[in-house]
Image (cartoon, rainbow, N blue to C red; front, side, top):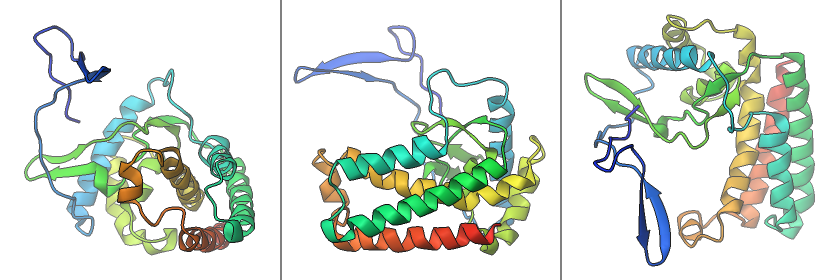
Length: 246
């Protein structure tokens, strides 16, 4: 992690007013990096060690204000927000909602069948949030989605493809992880439910920010009939993938 610097005024948080708006900000040392090479086993093992260390600290306490990664918070509430906001086009509305219900029902069954330890997590540990620096290894950024949840949430987004396609990459990742933190292999069955929650949550994340002019410019495909049709198809695929997990 790259910590904020201590400022001359004391502490790490400053305030400034611009155009009548009060902003809070911090300053950190510039640490540029590149994307990690996730096909390299040594890189995966190093990432596993880092996340294992992160979780070894995270399991020592609990968040006071952060959310918990569960079916309601990351599934049903986002689904309701999208529906109530009228973001789904008319012709795709019924199919998308039915696919959401089926996928969340199946995901909930798997969560209930495999109760897991809740840890403090990074929460959004995908390759885009990892800056790799030669000789230094990974620097993790973007902690705004930190939450409490199962350990596998911070691992599965670093793996390519579906659960059945990533066994080779999983070995070095877990080997590094378990140098610092024990991993319950039963959590691997939660990868597809967690992928399902991420899909629905991401749609709501875009919808919540759609009034920001930057978002329609950056995501012009969001909200189109093609987008919702694709989401429906992917959610149906998730139902099948979760059914294979028993």
